[in-house]
Image (cartoon, rainbow, N blue to C red):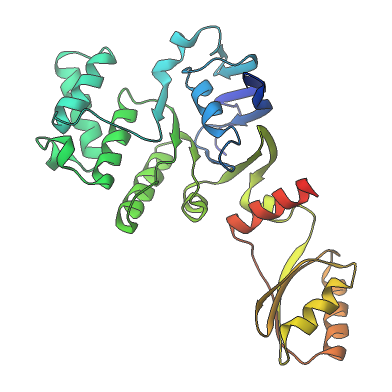
Length: 314
């Protein structure tokens, strides 16, 4: 990480909606150039947190500090540094792409040649210059999402907050969105991205924040989150049925999260550290079963989140 000073520091954030505690004591930090995924089920508090970060909502208590400025007490001082791409973007249907982006450039306070240059810059970055004279209601979902991204980038904000940016996109549009996000990361922008499409998020983010019922339940890099209990996930393939091998592993304290993946394959978490312990366990299994394959396995982001959520509820 190039800069060790946080661009954003969130401390003990709380937000109620009636009797519902939608955000419950949330704290985290974002650093320049970092891309962080915000993950949780519907109702976990993700969108509420994002709206508070970009000053569209106010916390009941807690602090949001952007580069030394209290964003709750002085929102006008930080808004120019924040970009927001909401879920459910609905632009004015009968305007052209250029007219729409130009309207927001004017709202941002830009004028004259500077405004024209800024509109051209964001259209070019998002690869929609050729759509400038098209009416928005004639565009595809992927093209409309690019307009939402272009609007977010007006004024060159340093912290970009994106809520479900890949929702409803076809595979090609997702690939294009991921490339644009990676381009922003290379520019040194800081990104906070919420998505239900965890495979996409894994490719766009270097760190993750897992949420459940308004609380952060875990955070870190994907590798750190996958090794939470110092468990090593492995796949074991046997010549016989997987059910017998799975039953044996479940009966031993050294194995957790035992799952049959195929008729002869089991995935499980081995909870003792060290290669010697793993080698000894493999010899024991080989004495009971005809093992045809045994290798370490990286958990994907979805599996990691499910495991963290399961551990919390247990």
